[in-house]
Each structure stands twice: as C-alpha cells, then as structure tokens.
Image 1: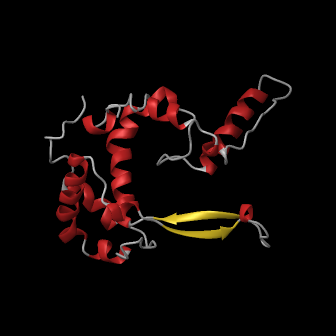
Image 2 (image 1 turned 30 degrees about the horizontal axis):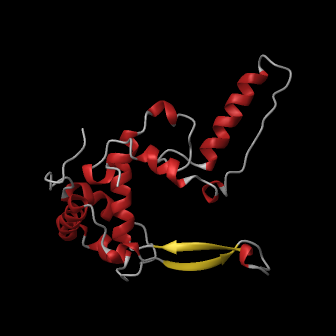
Image 3 (image 1 turned 45 degrees about the horizontal axis):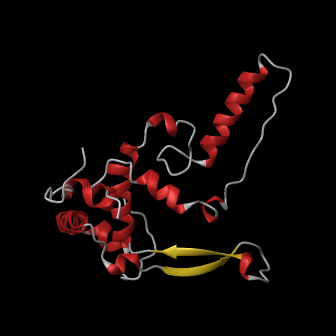
Length: 186
C-alpha cells in the first residue's frame, strides 16, 4: 500500500540510532559535517535527523545540499594519460547517504520480488565479490559431480549503466510500491 504524503512520521529516531552508532569514519560531503559528530552524539541527534528525513520524505523534496557532491578523479591505472584513465569518486553528505540507505531498505528492496534477486550479490547486505565466487564455485563443483566438464561464461557489467535506457528503468521503478509523490508518473 503506497504511503500517503499525510503519513508524516514514517521514520523514528530509534531507526536512525543504529546507523549513527555504527557509522564508520567516512569523508564528509559538501556540508562538511564529520562522521565522528554523528557517531559520538547519536542519541541526541537521532530524533532530529528522523524529523528532517520525515519532512523531506513527506514533501517529496530533497534538500539541495544533499544533491551536491564533491567529485574527485581517481586514476584507474598507474600512469594515467587520458580522461578515460580516471574514474570519478563522488562524496555526498553523510545525511544524504543515510537517507538513501533508509529508502532502499524500507521501500525499494521490499518492493522487488525476491525471485528477481536470488542470484544478485551486489548492493545487498549479504552480497560481496567473495559471496559471488563462493556461489559460483559451489555450483561448478556440484555440476562436476555428474558432468565431465563445466563451461562458464562471465560478463563484465562495469559499464552497464552507461548504456541503460533510463526511460525503461524509470518506467519499471514507477511500478514499485513507494510514496504517492514518488511513484506517480510526472
């Protein structure tokens, strides 16, 4: 059931506290608020941050400083010569990253049918490159019990989002059960 804009309190301080308490030392974003501040004063800040998130989520608006990132080019190879030899690393404000985590955990993941992501390892709490390799080795080993050989085809999707049809992607996202003002076609 989609959440209505009038359902103002959807995030509570107790949901924010574990994120703040367990925060790792990370770079501050454009707002220059350091991670130690959130970690040290998590009890005092949790309710305030929850209220800020509730206002943002209920209005369907993102604070402009959350949309500003500090972009640093990092070399992909030891002796970069061209722009393609660099990858951009974008650092957004910590509150922006926390808001994204909450949206993904509370509304995006529950909207995706689990049978669509059973073999997905990226962007999951239990997913990692190691987990993907262990799964692959498990399946190959099981197949070798009954077969003489196993063929594996691997694909590198590192540039996949460079060619994504964003119109199709947005059309699929609008089918998720999210806030009214997010899921409406505009």
